[in-house]
Length: 541
Image 1 (cartoon, one colour):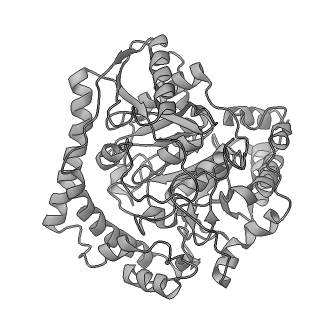
Image 2 (cartoon, rainbow, N blue to C red):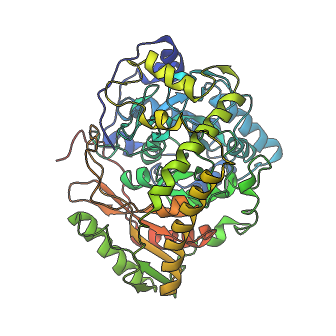
């Protein structure tokens, strides 16, 4: 959640990438709450409607996918100029919606997302007329030969791929000083609750778009908190699934040992439904094989208002409370609510930060990034740098548009001298040690207290959009152990600061506890109804 001063589009490549969006967005940017609240989708408030509500309206012919798609395109036209959440509108979206209406009329719905508009993070391959750039102009002319596996599954489930959402460039792995939500292709993403505040990163656009109702649901990716942090700062539900539950094939990588994709939605119901649609084994991604069958067949079985009754939920306060008064107030209310819902609340379930975790992790990440990004570039058709060394050279040559004066490419330059050899014994020792430390930190805490899950504040309130860190955050990471372990984590809206900034709470657990965590999140969400629609305030009161 760092700084940005908007740079004008200064090259033809960026103009071409953004053209599909900029044409409709040039119209008046109406972000007033009255305009948003006045809309209705088939008689239902678009901020509160769920995908099952929409499916019911579509089945009863009170709504068509074409109408629904047009409504979301209109919301993008009106709201996105101030949000910067959507980079590209799919020029074929309306045609896909019409085809969905025909398929439903003659054959019935193909899947749970039939006719439902979905936005993708801009690092997911689509073999259509949309670019896949990971936010960098270096990939403006890349031409993926086929859809990412999760995109294929979305289309198979009937979804309308509406467009692509902005992101922190290179998923925040170019520089530790990178600006959250900024990319050379998409500019700066803003938080729809308070527009001069960050939407965090790197799935910034996906979270802001979900919060503002620019699609029914969005998809993000997470390597180190890039789903859960943006979701918490935009009052949305963010699901980082167990590593391997969702295929990573066709997603611009940081590392296959931590990368995962997951849904960001305005409610747990839509997040769960979408997770079920995109999960499943993929022969091209070996990590998906162990995950097969770990979710129950029907997502609806986890949506249980009584899911917390009788469960032992550990409370993780260390490093997360005593930092911000609003976070403390909202989290204390969360703990009380869990008790009211029948959970046995166990204090002192603080997950330790292993002392040597990052000592092992950084060398592993650098080697994995070089290996994985080189493999992705080699497999991707089109005109673009051939490897990491080429990306480094490109950024130097295009320093202006890539904003190299404000933050550099230190992580790229640290990764390039590595061998990028993931079979190297020294590399493998670093990765194995990091994973072992992270898993023991969580599993030992769960076992020591006999817990079903752990709850903790997700992150601090959104920082100003021009924030750049010059010191470590006083708020300890809630994601370090989960992401390295490959364990699931779900954030749910929990409340707001006194001045209206969203706050979330996180449920986390062990490997393949995704279904249980979704159940706990649903029970908590339904009991609190904490989320309210964004107001698009220009600044804090």
